[in-house]
Length: 281
Image (cartoon, rainbow, N blue to C red):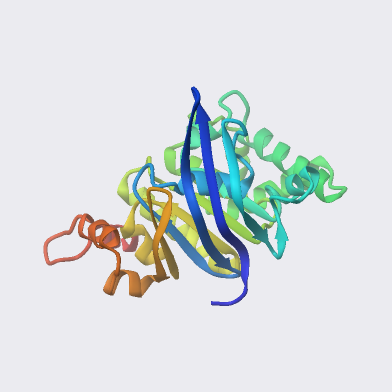
């Protein structure tokens, strides 16, 4: 792989609650090269989301505490960077696609208001002098890029007026507003039916490839990973137990936990993996 855009090195995190301290990440290391698609895989409680939150600076400290490690973005250590500089990167150089649109979107504001506000603050961080009309033109442009048919109507709508698939596309559009280099997608489409989820994952993959972005996909679904990632990291109990090219992980897994995950993927008749069929539909 090429030089990493994002590099996590020996990251350890612990949580202290009710007088007890639990270490939840143990010397986690992973790389996301520029223009690559990387998956971080594991079951619930494996440490995927804690890793993602540490990268994005979203851990609540306390109760969380990063006890060791480095998180490098484009060579700069996010953990030693001044807070103002790190905030400038969040949502601009690196953006999140969250898994639950209904909890991520504010029900009392229109989509246009929410996207316009995100872009306004991003412009402020980057020193851009864009007016409201220009910002809304950018919002409509990005909505078209995520294949929303009527951007004008969508911007005037409230989240409850849109389908689950449309809301998920809006979260992708929000992440793309400021043209980041890195997208971190946290279980996108999990709450959707399999057909809509497949469409969302294909859209995300197409956008990442067309824009030359780096993608870190956080997921428990190995069926998704096979079609959307070049490289895979497998986590179990806060430890990266195996990593390698996607083909290697699926065809010759070394760790028993990885083999168990692959064996747990449901299959259709004829031996085709359900997850793979879902993504390719």
